[in-house]
Length: 500
Image (cartoon, rainbow, N blue to C red; front, side):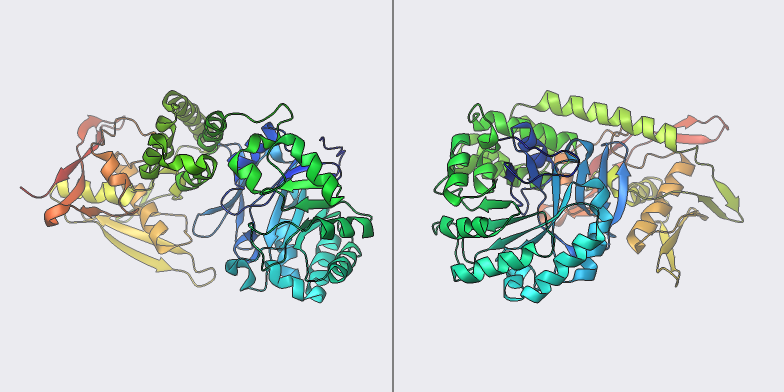
């Protein structure tokens, strides 16, 4: 099957990767496209969370990220999929749905509304399959989106208890102006073990003039590429959408036949590393592809893996991981050089200030500037850093001042949280003093026992060891002379026990 989309995305005669929570992230979508999928759907993203996001162009990864106030990346996309990715949202509110659609519409090919998910996390907010019992709200949401965005709008439903009710709802949806409708051929109470009702999908397809996308055939009907056409024909639909069959092995979209799952996993990991996918999401998707193989030696090693580096090593991609990280670091340095002028500190009274924004993604998850500053103070036998934080009323942003050795340090930029404001203040102090701050790719950190620290909670200054002892990150620094003649410290850090 091939997409005949020209300009606007076409939903006729296509095979699509279905929206799947935790599976439909960027690495899986790109892999599915490589293997023959015509269109890929994002996982369902809730409108309330997306409405709070900021659109951020990630120059290092060459992606567009939609970042929540807590710095969590809710949706990441890139130019490679821009013309073929459908953004699916969970919503029960027309105005909020429109706000989210307008936020992402320039970075995706179409907008889809989830009206079929039977899971509680979706239905409890009146979203997903809960909308099937409220056709007036369905009509309001879809009409608002069709009128409010420039990209095609679609929706995905489940069938209703009777064929007549299902067709009536589908006709009402068509009148809103949507470009296509996906029909999962099961009732909201039914699960994958129940057979798919192809006759319902066929009745909807015969009643409508817009494309109908058949969904739900992974268990019984679709095992290989050739089965996709058989399912489409059985359902009388324009197109087919695959979920579990593609999750188990996305090469089901491949006209030439299935690839070995081991090769597919390796290709998936390469995308996960290239686009800095969260390690736990990488791990989850690989487990779905391994299926019974999770009990194999590699599967058992995967169970204990905590990072993409460890996952890469398990599947024979250590060198690939290291090469990709080196390439990303080159881009980080280039972006920093091109976009950021030299940071100049200004001292007013006893406060030294610098425009620093704390970017969590620039630091390993279990390392923070506050940790480095605290351990340096312990090594130097100084009083521990003290943070004084203020919050301004107009936007509730935070600014923190850290006191270190009778001097105070502060970022001139305000942060979204008290924690990030304190980290920014610590960065200013460390940079003024010429100390390492623990950033990803920072040279000569000399971290020993890193594996143990990676398994402790983020931003934790000390981790409890068996027997009640604590391990601290102890910074060992060698003074050097800066261009201004002041003592500057370099080198790295190691783990050291307080106990005997």
